Image (tube, rainbow, N blue to C red; front, top):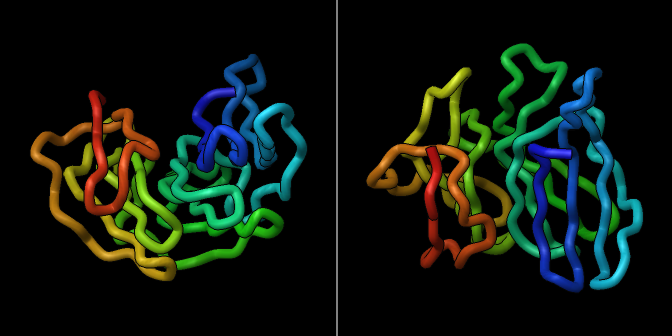
Amino acid sequence: RSYSAAFGTTTAAVWAGGYAPDPTGTYYDTVFEYDGSSWTAGEDLPATFGPGAAGTGIGTLTAGVLCGWYHASTPGGVLNDTLEYDGTDWTTSGDLPLQAIDGSSSGTQTAGLYITGTTGFPTTRSAQSCEYDGSSWTAGEDVNTIRFRGMGNQAGTQTAGMLIGGV
């Protein structure tokens, strides 16, 4: 699978959604948890959010956030929804101030950062960053170079994150 989202640590991680570039082009709503040695099934993404792809994750196995998501059956596809995961269940939270996918993120469930992304197809890019406080997002400072698909997921904190590369 590609275009999935993940968050956590090497001994407590979550991998969610994704797209299989096989002949059927299947989008997934499945979630897997990793304990450092094996993967097990977690709670599937809610029907209103999955199947989807190209999201990004923040936080830990028991306090995680997914945002910046593409939903296969939504007109236009790009969502501004935010989901929180407590290690057992998914709940919705505050919306991103923009609809974007292919962004990067860092931080925690109560101090998260979403950076840039694509706000339209095929490649309408955004310079905006967004900050999360555990219940709502606010617009942050723009990045100095507009890009998407940069690396940097979980590279730092809300106040000291990194965005590396990108298109």
